[in-house]
Length: 452
RNA sequence: UCCCCUGUAGCUCAGCCGGUAGAGCAGGUGGCUGUUAACCACCUUGUCGGCGGUUCGAAUCCGUCCGGGGGAGCCA
Image (cartoon, rainbow, N blue to C red):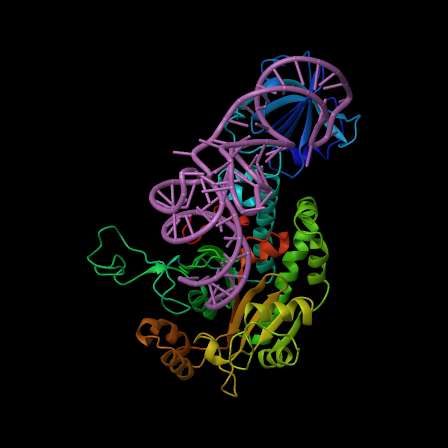
């Protein structure tokens, strides 16, 4: 039986078995206490082994942190403080030892930096275990949300020939000895240069224009030489795309989506959240409840710039209309001015990609960024440019080869319709939900520049 | 890519203005105890990140390379 279930079970005379890994052993004169964890929940089960049981000296007294074990016995009410029930062992089997002299994990707190050097063992710690359980919960919540909203999940390609954001940040996919010179170079395995996707958006648009409401949820790759606590070279992104949808409806969905996800974690991950509230961020629970409890503030870029200009606050990078919002500006808006999630819309066309829909005044595009306190941009989205000629002009203005994107232009040539979507950085959401300050600690095996 | 900080025992870290190293935890041994970050006593462990330089002498100063962290840019 899983420990998560056992801990909610009443003591019985029935013989049962538990399997897990030893977290710590404490010896009394004629008995030992072994705490075991099986990953099903944060809490350990206290196993009590009496001195007269078989293999007490040969096995039980030799158990150390990390050993994989199986106990059979009975669940009993615990006479001591600290737990309601405990497991009275009758027999023990050791699946695998973990020599204490070499096993890197000790029954003490380790720094996250140290744990990053042993990514294969760190899931055995309380904090990384809790992160990954919450991550798993969020994955199912994402899928449940879109199911309830009548979306179809599309698996867009990981290998892509279209660079959504502009050249220079794709990983190139090729074969050994494919050709002479710097890749990408002929002969091309796929007939032309290909790379790992930087976004599933363009492909998702094609399917939105047929199925109406679609979303992708998959890995994304950026070959940026970033060294920050919020960037990974390989990360996961959720990207819904909706036909017959404008920017307003796009923002509505994003807000509903984020609230749904956070409420889901608040409802289902009490224990794990408790850990983060205790050791990582005291105000965590409060901050999460603040997101679900009120409407997101919405402001246009122009209004935001005005607010920043009149704030009297001195920024390292001065702000003026036409320049992009810096991290410090975003933080100031969401943390100090609005004190919560903030949606900034209608950015200058010059600082946004070609596919965003040009507003009627011709200077701004129907873009939106959702800014969260402490982590900045968590969602970026837009209504897409659905007019063939306008899109063509914007591509030309940004030096994008229309031939390479003819299929994308085709979506505007045949049965074009207003549509919109956004991208959610899954790890950034996880950072917000857990309070973990470094993005490398919310993904199983982080890949960053210089490290894989 | 730029700026700042950092690299000392298995882990976390102290070592001020240069005189070849310490603490807590972990580990080992013994003791005590229905224990729970168990407790008490004793014990082991270091090419002080690499290379080069200054100096009678460098963990300590300088240069350089490598690793780690934070921030910026880019973005999610």
